[in-house]
Length: 156
Image: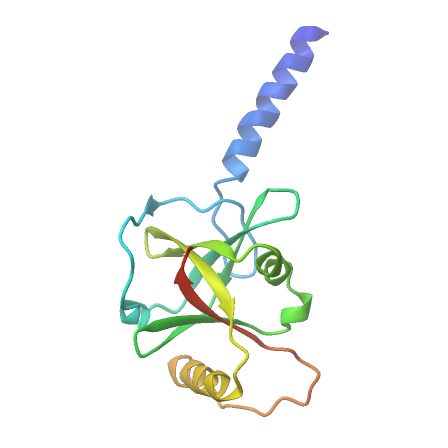
């Protein structure tokens, strides 16, 4: 019996370690992001201008990594991410609790912090940047969908 329990625990441990390094895909969330961690501060995020999707890794309230795909846009040399229906996204709640995130852009991991952007003029510039980059029409929201915007900054 002890051998069976040990074997089961071993299989569970292997499965968990595999699952915890699974990147997200489209609308399927993942766990911990894999890749080389960038060690240099990023002064200019404009290299992301042609990148359509990045990954954002947050930490759940029970300390398990949770990663999602996200769109990003640069305004000048600054990087922003957004979430439609922000009030319904678990990763947004994770960021509200702990703004330290890991971003995977290409094959590199960037350990950063997300800071909410609440200034209406800045949000309008960000929204225009998203509309241009992703080629969609800017729309006035009717108040049903909450859109959240975050600036990517260096961790403290």
